[in-house]
Amino acid sequence: MKKISVIVNCHNGEKYLFQCILSIINQTYRNFEIIVFDNYSSDQSKNIINNFKDNRIKYYKSDVKLSLYEARNQAIKKTTGEFIAFLDVDDWWDKNYLNSRKQLFNSEEYDLFYTNASTYYQNSKIFKKYKKFNLPSGKIYDSLAKDYFIIISGLIIRKIFFYKIGEFNPNLNIIGDFDFIMRASKKANFHGLNQPLIFYRVHKNNFSKLNSEMFFEEYKRWFENNNIDKKDIKFQKNIKFFRNKLNYLEITSLLINKKKNLLLIKKILQHEMIFEKIKFLILFFLPKKLLKFLKK
Image 1 (cartoon, rainbow, N blue to C red):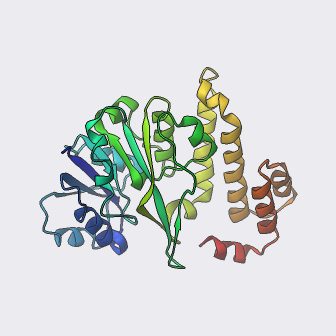
Image 2 (image 1 turned 45 degrees about the vertical axis):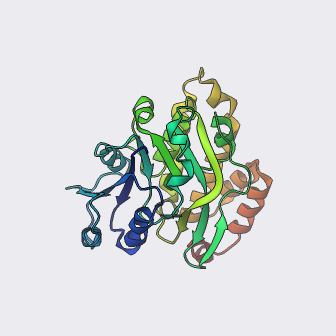
């Protein structure tokens, strides 16, 4: 049975930490270690971890606050398993999550594994299946370009392949997992599982929701940096999808953070996705306070 290193990055995540760790300990797959990388928390995270009497848990605390993806890189350096799995502190797993790939771990056909999710909306206490279409396996770059569908809490990577691709970009705070997966999908075979064996929590403090302008700026840099290489056939083939996503993030950021004006209306009308265009027009005419309320 292959050893899996499960990385839990946290920063002041005491509210969800117990449920997160317990969902790992309760896995039917037993050969794992848990790397808890505490990114300079000031809450009770360490005490919560100390209350678990399980020698598979290894706790590390940074002396300074790092970017999320530098923290992920540092955590990976502590791992001893052949595979690396990620579970963000506000998410949790079904007990059969790791065991669902037990047989595939012994094959070299796949280097990355991902699964569907059950999205849990914290405010309304509602669960919804994340993606309703059949998740693809194999070379999936083109599919990801059209609709990015991988949640990092449902990602398992063969450790040797991680270093072939290169680390997470430490200069990113929101799209570091997207950047890594897009790089990996140019080379690796992925295995997708349609069964929603992870629970992805949506709440008012999700970092990407609170920082829509940063989200747009990071994605814009990613888009421009990739577009420089005109020989990147995969990127150029899908550039219209990436450009649509860039426009979507820009309009979202402007709606939330800036004053509404004719320039914004023009950007909305130029947006190519009809359904999104209609949604943006509705949001444009909503009062700013109501828009921010609906965003929660």
